[in-house]
Image 1: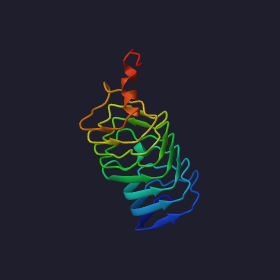
Image 2: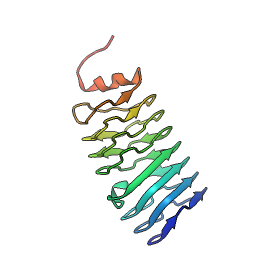
Image 3: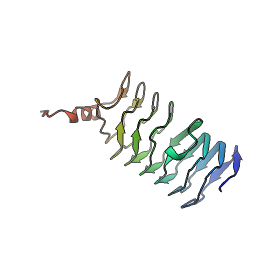
Image 4: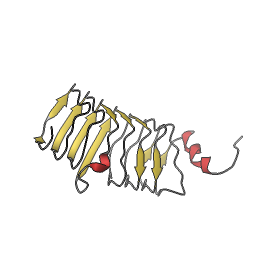
Length: 170
């Protein structure tokens, strides 16, 4: 699938494991119930792309064409992926399992992580202003290393923001 252009296409129940999307363009596309394990994304353009009920394993989204990246995820397994250095304002990650992913230097302003499990994912120097972590679980976010403004959290998980302090809650 290298060097191809796709517009308004829906990919359903396709196994893309180990394929390369290098230099390809996806505009207004949907991946539904697909396996995208270890897909190569070098210089890939993702413009208004939805991943729905997908398995996304080991993708380096930081290799995508950075000037225009607009992606959303719904009910997906996102594991061992890199989102570092990207502008992901307004990105939806809701109802997903986001395990061991990296969000270094990522703009996640107004991003939605509602009802998601973020076990092992790392946020560092990320802008989380106006983002929503309502009913999200297993996140560990250091408030000293990230930007917060009107960020939404739910009880009791919001207590995890205190993990950076050497305190005991009783």
